[in-house]
Image (cartoon, rainbow, N blue to C red):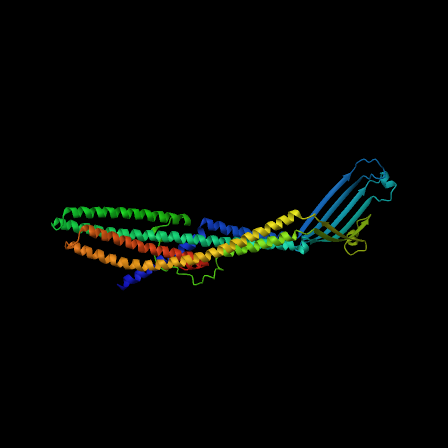
Amino acid sequence: MKLFIIFSLVLSFNLHASLGELAREFTDKNQGLVEKKLQIQMASLNLQAIEEKRPWTLMYSGSLTENQLDSSSSFTNQNSKTLVHSLSILKDTIWGGKFKLENVYYHEDRDQSHSAVSFGSSTKNSYQFYQKLSYAQKLGANFLGRKEFQEKEAFMYSQKLAQKNFDETLSLSLLNFFELYSRASLAKKLLSLQKEALVRAQKRTGLIRRMVKDGLRLKVDLYSSQMAEISQKEAVITAENDLFEALDRLSSQLHRQVSESDIGPLKDNQLGLPNKSIKELEDNVTLSKLETAIDQAQTSVKNADYSIMPDIEFEAGYKTNRIKSENDGIFDEGKLGEDKYEVVFSLNAIWPFGFGPQRAELARQKVERKILEYQKGAISSSLKETEILLRKRIQHLIKNLEQAEQRVSLARLVLKQYNQLYDVGKKDLDQVIRSEEDLIRTETALSSYITQKQILEASLNQMYGTLKAKLMSL
């Protein structure tokens, strides 16, 4: 007896644990969830691309030009060969600036036989090297790169929103998965009940057959018992089909064939109610997602607001150079810090009249933010109403469960008494069969109540954001 109890406990634990194992498998392999996970990775890569889009850049250009073109003026035409090398380093900054360092080497070899050289003072060879350091800064609409920071912030919210979308999809998918699992578990239980009823019907038919043979019962009783047995066989086949359909629906979510052995028994209070009050909905995944979407929308509003300003860019440049007829020392004499220099300051501004498109975009972004805020408020109110309704339904189911458990106990006693009374000829077979049907209906109702209560409890846990943790711990 002790060995049987221990074996039952181990078996019960294994079946109980299978729900958590299936839930983890569902989370890892469900196609819709895998796609949502990839969207999180995509959002993360987009953010990384924003952070990495301003690298240090090295630019080189080189050219060799031979000019033998004719000209209408002998004083302006100068046949020559020109060699140019340009090497620059550039860097855009997140605060709206652009740094640039240019290094240019220039060599020109002129044709000495041309009159432009003969009448002028130019030499045959001319070498030039210059360095230029410049910095441009965005002002106005993109003052100190604030639009750049807002763009980065928007992508950060996009990454958060992708995570929130996954959390919401996972939560709702786990709720659907748990419901499918519970339906499959109910179908398995109902099949078990129908098989137990069939065993009772077969035993009753065997008993009546012996009683007919002994002249204690009429053949009509045997025929009635056989009909009831056949009807029960049909009920078993129907229950098997229901189980196959439930397993098939569950298999479509796991993308593999789920067998009957994967499904554990029905168990009341398997998840339990969330230990929270109606005011604590901050962990609700849908509200959390909308909150992130509102923050992202606010960032878009700020970005649009910044656009209602002129584009202004201030630039400062410092250049040094050296031109010689010989190449010696030209790099040292032309580098930054030498006495031959040029300093340039410039200011450029673009000022659209009225900012019509920018103002329209700002209004549109504000409307989108208001829509999200309204959705959050409406969903919050709806969730609170749903929470009250779910708890009331659970309380009603608890009462029905208590009544159903009593009815099952009484139905078993009635069936037992009717069988005993029938054996001594005090009850008709029809009464025995009806009591058998009453027992099956009552047991079915009890199992259905347990399933409904489990699903409602799962809905409450999903609402409060505790479903995943509870399922994974099973």
